[in-house]
Length: 456
Ligand SMILES: *Cc1c(COP(=O)(O)O)cnc(C)c1O
Image (cartoon, rainbow, N blue to C red; front, side):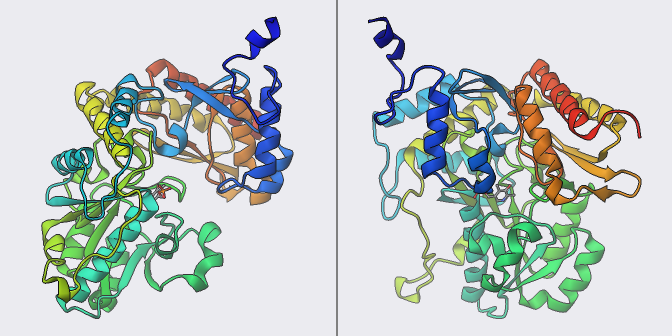
């Protein structure tokens, strides 16, 4: 009798019905038998002790053993208000009572219409049309296809190429990888990718000669505004966006901002473009769009680009692109609730002290002998670990220094995910100042424990 009560409410696991405490081991074993994880060397995974998340509360994730962990990277850069947010939970439940999904191909739905209007109202000026998809990679692919097709239909048939920045990251599907430039992720696939024009940095001095030479063949320049995330949080100097906008305009090159990581308050303003009041021609958003709840993305375009696709059906100017779950009503409801919280809780207005706390907290990391460059914009930071600071000599990849640091952090109750030897801090915008201190201290202690602490 007692035993039955104890097991009540636990997820049945095939025939394995785990005891409390045993649950984790069983889930882990089944995971290792059946699952293939993204960006994960599964040979290592199969040997490691893995963590299985069961539930969450605010900024904490809780595993099957009931252990709590601070979500230090916003569940891969997407969480905004924390987990189990009553307003977003309720919005999804209410929508569930109406309809979970219907197609957006040839039909519309209420939440998607409302969300499109909202997005246009907060987006950089001039972006007036919303095209939905399901992930950041897709939102970028769609922007690329729109830019290409736009010029083809406009009669500028030579504009077939894309300019991209070295070290860019725009997602993992083939088109998005084509405009990416992170050797570790992308080199192997090079033969499958379309040709692009690489620009070494967002520096206008580097960009102008390329445009001078190839300008009339370039359909668009795609870039992550303000900060290249996956590259290791590489920041751009102030004024860059303004200059890039002016230069692309003068060469009639469309400008695509990939705001998948930077959007929805991450950099301290709603969008990175807002820091310089710059409007791109196309903008991709995803990660924070639903507050980190459901997969939803959008590509925003100007009216001019949109108009370029209008015509008689037989002209075939239609944008032939769409996914089964495009504009999913549950996801759109979550996004609407997310944006409402931004307004009601004055999220952007309240970010400043947290951003300053993070900046101050990061200063102390300079005491650690193996910390190199530290970069931050808003609540987005990267701490570079180096073997030798003076020579800026990196740790060899095979030492897995970044991974060892995040394993140490996990033992101390914080979830992180490194980018090679760059430790990323990207907490939910809703993190409290006390929790932010916890995150910073724990990260400091973990780096110290792994790389050594005394001044070198
Ligand atoms: C994460 C990310 C993407 C890809 O988004 P997914 O939803 O993972 O496909 C694209 N661009 C940038 C800048 C990102 O950070």
